[in-house]
Length: 298
Ligand code: SF4
Image (cartoon, rainbow, N blue to C red; front, side, top):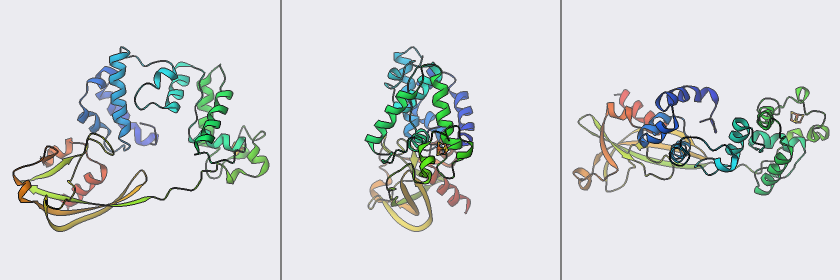
């Protein structure tokens, strides 16, 4: 939950999650929809699918116990080199390194590394450095200290060099390069996307569509995409903007009616859903907001 998400945001989700799934086995047994629903609003939904699959693997192949080495952990869905390093060193005391954005920034400054830290070759060099530096004794404390140094002292803007325990050995500070490092290459331009969706009603229910099981927002329910032939398009109801990872999305919702082909023949991914039932389904935040705004304005 904490990957890409702040602690304050995660806390209520975490408490609810542990009440619903107190053990790995409980999570492994849970239905996809229930797992997704408890994650709704946290975003980056591939995390929850991986977590669910990882719990199933741990229950099935490891008798419900998490592997205790970074190598074993990396076999689980969603656990990459960083997460494996963090769990193995902090929870199990294994001498393994980790590099996240904070650590990369600290290293780039302390060792005055000018290469683009996002480039695979530089990343490899940073991991190599971390591997050499991590001590056999309390490797978890060392790794946490490095990450905290980056999060609280060696911050992206206005680092607190005067209070920094590395100030005497930091090459960037000695050479006046602190503001220029790390080199993160050119920022990627955000992609703009316009999505048109159909709000179709029948006896107090709305027509909802389930997204495919793979890809962005997999398995979530949303207002159906406005496709020609499927719907008769009516008046515009609302336009809202939101951002998902690197996409700036404009969502336009139109009042629609089912086209004649669709009227009695809903495809398997389309369903009439009552207002109460919508609350129980997992929806992308933008669609939840759009429905709420439209219905409450009436
Ligand atoms: S001295 Fe400044 S730039 Fe160097 S590691 Fe510390 S906070 Fe970062």
